[in-house]
Image 1: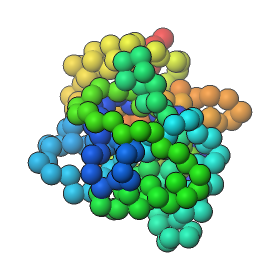
Image 2: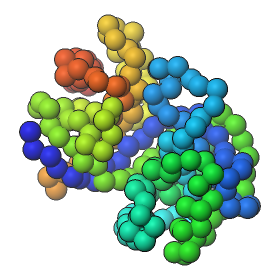
Image 3: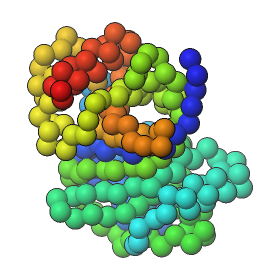
Image 4: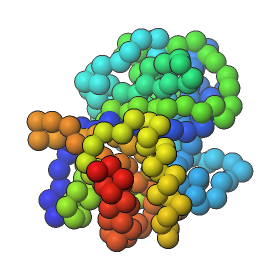
Length: 230
């Protein structure tokens, strides 16, 4: 199957917390947990950061984040994935740079410094634990089509995408997801909603995280949403 790269927006709901050490003094850094741990057991200690958000004082240009991240990767021989990010907690919205590819927590401050050197101004430090938030992430996504409207991420082995016929607000998405998960044989997957910018328009998609998900399961999930949305 052909591989293609496109821009996508993913919306996830997570209980986030703050990084309180191993960061530049006085800055606001958020840790986003590994979605696999929702379904495959939580560990008492996280050895490697999965997704980190550097909260900034002002909104960020997607183009600038991509350009700066590429420059940092080339200069310091890293493999960071930087994306534009907006976090909503209750009615409060904050902006940031979502960074993947940091190998250890003690490296966070140095990576922050690289972005600071490129002109980013970080927000003042805050501290909280297990706070529910909606996270909107704009990023490049590389996919391979497995079947009609069913895709496998070429960037993340355990991540898949399925097309759905129309837009869902967050409340509708949560309601339908609960209904579908109660009526499916294997509900051990993490799911989020989003869009692909493709073919000069928007395609509504769902992102599924499940190690070695079968095509049969992905098509079953897709079919159940299609039935609900028509």
